[in-house]
Length: 43
Image (cartoon, rainbow, N blue to C red):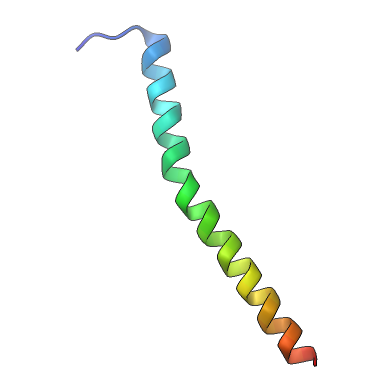
């Protein structure tokens, strides 16, 4: 399968973005959870 370099780079970038999306969402969940925990600790 010989695709042009541009298409190949685009595919790699897209799959990298897809792979990064989940960890980023998970990080936001963890951050909001830790924020909620610290808020409840202060009260």
